[in-house]
Image (cartoon, helix red, strand yellow):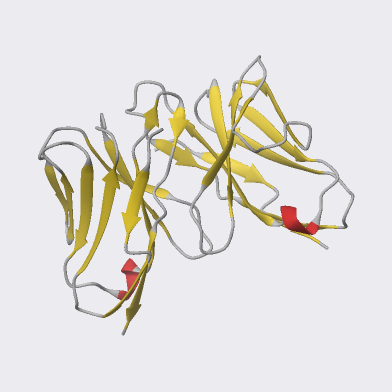
Length: 116
Length: 110
């Protein structure tokens, strides 16, 4: 199957700093990638849809100025959590799907963010 | 809007017992996918169901899609400790929305 990587796998930062998370499709091109947030014992919540070459589409309740998404190439999308606060601590996961493969989502390994 | 309900939220079983999780949608689905997420890991695709009444098997796992394509189930026969994790149903890309079920966390006592 297709491989999606994420970097870093975990990060600890101080409150008020910004953190960038990278999502890469390693062996395929992804015009669309998805960013999720998952709190402990909860389901994945879609935050935004990242579109290559255009603005991301954010879900209701997700602040676009706080969660900056850049999809500059067909293999890379980045999520920047700006001015992070402890309540932003979560597991962030990206996914992408291969065109024509029945919408199967290939997930990155996730990034665990802890804001002190 | 579309809603997907998954039950139960948690299931604790003795190794060797069976396990079932159910996914119910308020609208008719074009397809449904199932994913497994191990503790600390990321979701991994298990299967996709497309046809009304479809039943698919993967070793001890049996997946069903309802006749009305509004519900689905995942049944594990004779659970093993390797089955531990959270199972999510996922109705795929429905009008641009990606909505996962709430997930069923399975724990297996050896």
